[in-house]
Image 1 (spheres, one colour):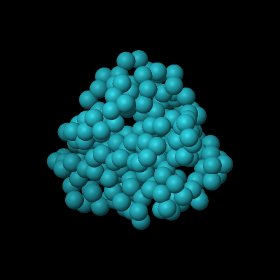
Image 2 (spheres, helix red, strand yellow):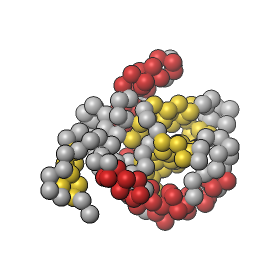
Image 3 (tube, one colour):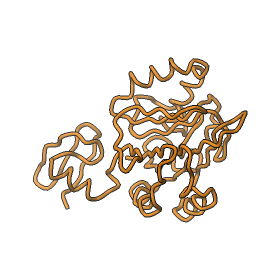
Image 4 (cartoon, helix red, strand yellow):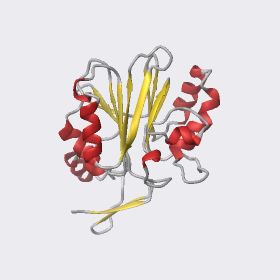
Length: 225
């Protein structure tokens, strides 16, 4: 399961130690979006970091440790679509797959997602990318888009940054003012969930079979360690 992160303005950015744990649990690529407040395009997307070394270098290049504005970060585990720079998050809202896969973009919308959407993507793209393509024609009516997201979020967590605000959909965990789509990258949280007979990938109740813990919500099985 991916982890999506939203750092509000004037809140301290998570430490590199915390982000390294997010990466270790979700090592299929990372990216971030930050609001820069430009007149034409207010948001920058930088993504496609396929190693921790690359992400750390970008973190330092863009001075994210001290960034005071709104910031989205995402660490990916691939479900739909291949493991590649273009399939990492965030994404702008556009119908153009080439633009969705660009690793450096100026835009007025940036979206990150954690979960599995009931969408069958066409070609080597993720469900999130297909979702952004479907939302693109609605961008001119932002309230309608947000209403749609609220209705369909379900067990998914979605964050949308616009030039004016950041909107969260689904259940997020707040830690020291920073919002995480899940805490399963933190082994302490995972062990706590096991003790409560919850499956770490989706939080659903599971039925243990000997030392195996099958989850019928997300079709994963975890062996008790």
